[in-house]
Amino acid sequence: MRREGQPGLGAPLLWLAAGGALLLSAPATADLSQQCSYESYEVPALKGRSLRQLLNAATPIREGGNPFHGHTAWHVDWHFQMMPLPSGRCGIDSVQTQLTATITLPGPTDPAIAHSPQFVQYLAALKAHERGHYEIGRHAAILIDQGILTLPSEEDCPRMEQAANDFANAQLAAARDADLRYDRDTGNGRTQGAQLD
Image 1 (cartoon, rainbow, N blue to C red):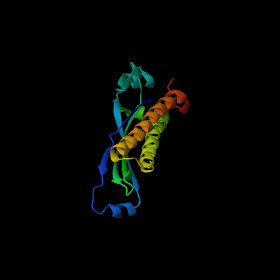
Image 2 (cartoon, helix red, strand yellow):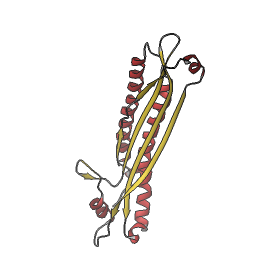
Image 3 (cartoon, helix red, strand yellow):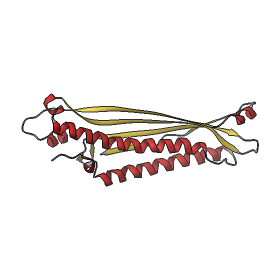
Image 4 (tube, rainbow, N blue to C red):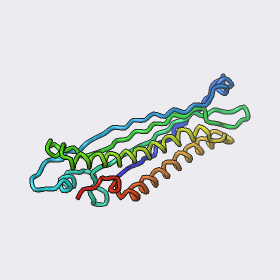
């Protein structure tokens, strides 16, 4: 349903060591860490209401005034180390990228609702849809992590820093577009079974 991709700030670190030649002999490295957590919002039981009505009333997730039952917020941060090359140019020595995400889903307080076949089936489909948003963020993080590492060297380190951050921000923009397309293509999860009558 709703998703949110946020850019991270690329924080460069420059190797300024006397033993720079030793650093050049070590292979460049990339490091991606991932963390995905789940949150739920309470859905109280109210007699005479359908499951859709209960979820619409309980959800804190709204976009354009419309209620959404699930939400995925992902955030990518990247940090890289640059190093001067013997040629006088500047290159990337290492990259660390972190993906953090929170998936918010409904959590009925009434066991009769929580264990009803209709809710169990809907929740499984909704969770699968939201995991799709997480995977879009994960794919962007992988592209950033591996892509910065393989960028060609630049004339100097300020240009290298700019090139790395421009590359990462372009990946985030593409991922935000992919998130919107994913919702359009799946009808916000309806084609994946996240639909209530």
